[in-house]
Length: 86
Length: 147
Image 1 (cartoon, each protein chain N blue to C red):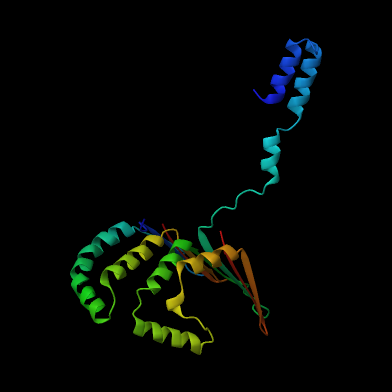
Image 2 (spheres, rainbow over the protein chains, first blue to last red):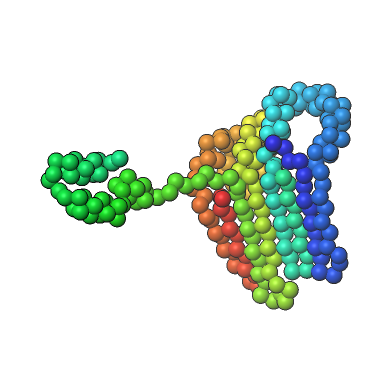
């Protein structure tokens, strides 16, 4: 399943911490028309680059699907940053 | 009803043992662990299939008064599998460039030869890898494991 939300948080020792909850489901819906518009260009680029476009789409879809539950956090003494996709 | 209980009841029915003796035998049976249970307890519990690859980096600088830096990355193993499959989509020309770049950096890997089975083998072997990097003033500990 593709990630439907992202939790981004940033904390700095001297500044206010902020947490951002991004509803990715809405982002995907907004991007859908753009993707459909760009699809012919993607197909042409794949043919020029000697890549099977269907296999490329399948591979990209698989990557998008497996992004769910990815977590990255960087903690420094003065600041910290974390991203969680779910 | 298990075999031992049936045997005790048979002996009681035939008059070979008294009711008190049968009761004592039943009590002894309850104290004794079942053979099937003992067999399963001796076996190690089945190892759960890992779902994530975790990379933890702890960096400590001796002269830094601010404290340690930590990086924690949790990536679903599915993403790595998808990445391996993506490698097969890369056109031959681009693959050569990638291989050349890898060779230049001392990695003799041909990305065209990487198969999903190879990744599974690595995951099976990757219980807990700890790499300690000691530089002049800093100590970096990289821990890679599947969970």
